[in-house]
Length: 253
Ligand SMILES: [Fe+2]
Image (tube, rainbow, N blue to C red):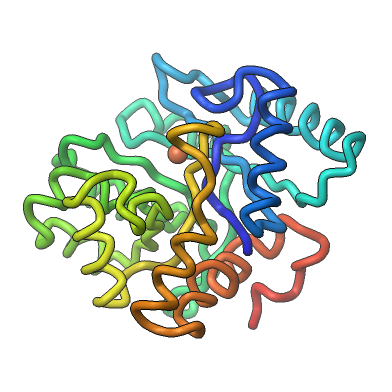
């Protein structure tokens, strides 16, 4: 399986605090059946002031440690950007590493993993999404099922759907780890075929550990193997193929 949203890099956000913790989490990813993971640390200005530079430095450190420890996990690198006005200059300076690419209506977009605040859908989000598209960037909305605004009113998803946004459901939500409201919205999005893929959003080995195999099994039992594989293998591969030598070329399938 391929995980496109996780916090694996040491010491730069609320994921692992050091290399030893990061390696421990990488081993948990492998034990969960994950072969490829794109590390997506937070870029949330004023809280996690990461840039392309801070992320790539931590990424290089972890890649070396993974190689030395012979952990069979291929690592890619992107970021989870928090939606706010201050993100615009960072985007203009190309300081937000992109997740991958996605073909939509004949346009080959770069894809950015975009995080909304958990308690609401900020007014003007649709304008930011439209502005991103003018810069050839398509938003993948991180864990919409955990957003209280969407939970209260699914119609708020409509402008994001109309704009062609991609949607990442968090594996733990799918199996009930973030409560009933998140699981119900995840179920609804799965049923409506609105979910693009599942990802772990793993942060640690306790409350935020990788549960992709469990979520995959849940989808397979509710629907079928084909749908489960689409969400944990085929769509992730299509999105992040260019990050990995071993997957390159699959993005065009
Ligand atoms: Fe995250």
